[in-house]
Amino acid sequence: MRSSASASRAPPRARRRARARRAARDGRAATRRDAGARALADVARVVALVGTLGASAAERFEARAPDDGVASAVASAVALVAGAAGMAMSLERETDAREAALADKVRAQADAMADAAWEKIEASEASAEAVRRDVAARGVARVNGVMREDTARAMEAYVRETLRTNDAGGDGRNLSVESFGNVYCKKNRWDLKLAYDAPVRAALRECVASMGEALTAVCGADAKLVELAALVSDPGSTRQPVHPDTAYRRDPSVFTCFVALQDVERDMGPTLFIPGTNNAQAHVEFREGNEREGPVFRRPYELGVISRGDATLFDSRTLHCGTENDSSRRRVLFYFSFQRADGDNPNAAISTIRTELRDKYTLADLFP
Image (tube, rainbow, N blue to C red):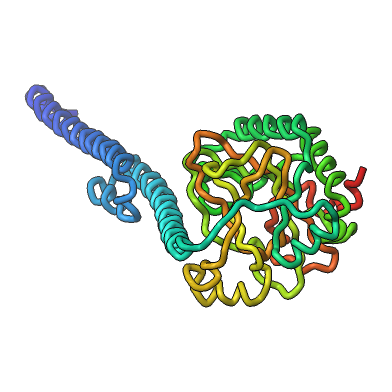
């Protein structure tokens, strides 16, 4: 037991030691608060400049507060967010670079075609055999009046509502692959996969009824439905590169029908076709010119300036593209493709058709 004198002197020393301990604790707490504040401040900077942080974020935080678990946790989270954001930005830059390269190709092709003669595509003779001959020799034929006006208007309204409910943005990026196909030059342009709803069924069956003999002559009654969609080109959409939908094969395989759901005027981005390019020679010229120049681009071309309910039927090997929509009106083409039973379709896995409709119908199934 301590003496009374010792007892009278002990409290000041105890108080000093207690004050020292409290000061130490307060110092450590302040250090943690400062570290947390610094971490939060850096989070704000990451949000503002997330693309510049990358993998160094964790090191920067840990260097400031090596003993603070909260700061370290924040640092790790920030590093993950920064890494994911950096990856997204990298992909965005790659997409921008691809689109810039595509725009450069389009300019080169347009320059190469500047002096080529062009005209509006004219209708084939009104017989299945005439359509078959035109598609075989030219790669494309026009067939008038395959859809009634009321059916076309109903389909146009259906497409408009479907785009609205799918919240299709103007840049055409980040769209559901179940609802949208891939398309060149996505800004203000969509390749909309169609569900087999009543307006779509009515439109498809009406077109098949109108064109049944010609379609049978071209691809056979046992041809398989491989695409069912709508191509939408809004004002401001740019010209696409000239391309074939199917890389050259010796034998024809896929045939596509574009049906106008409104009158297509010259300034609305009509489809451009280069007739006679569904053959080996044209594809050789196309490749040898690096898809940018050469004799294939000096050939006369035709534009799908057609009326509501009219159609263009073409061999998917034919060189074509959508042109720029400089008007104030939306252009919508309802389209479907059939693959010959014996055809080799290199794009079968990515054809623009909804999953539940793939391999479900043949041309014969759709006859009335």
